[in-house]
Image 1 (tube, one colour):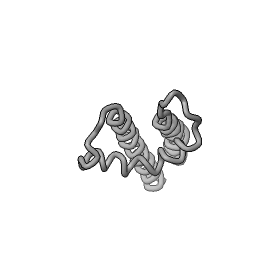
Image 2 (cartoon, one colour; image 1 turned 135 degrees about the vertical axis):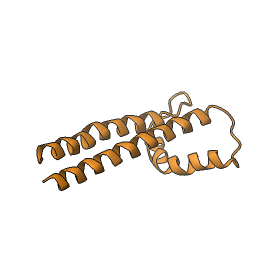
Image 3 (cartoon, rainbow, N blue to C red; image 1 turned 45 degrees about the vertical axis):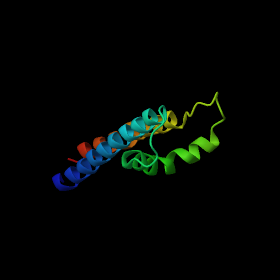
Image 4 (spheres, one colour; image 1 turned 90 degrees about the horizontal axis):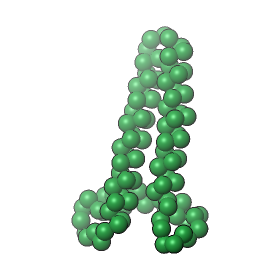
Length: 98
């Protein structure tokens, strides 16, 4: 049972890394939005292209609050809850089948 356990642990680690990377991309996007970035900058374009499909639906559902965009905060909270629930459950399951 070591192979399935190690495979599940590897999947949990990859999910954790992917969530952490996307967390920092969301943070970078929020920081960039505070200044007037050059829209033709490749880094700015990458940040917007990667985060906009996730942020736009949330932004449309949130009420307008003093011109503050709270969608990055909602996404960050959702990412952390997903990590705490799904990734930790995968880790616990992998350890229990050893």
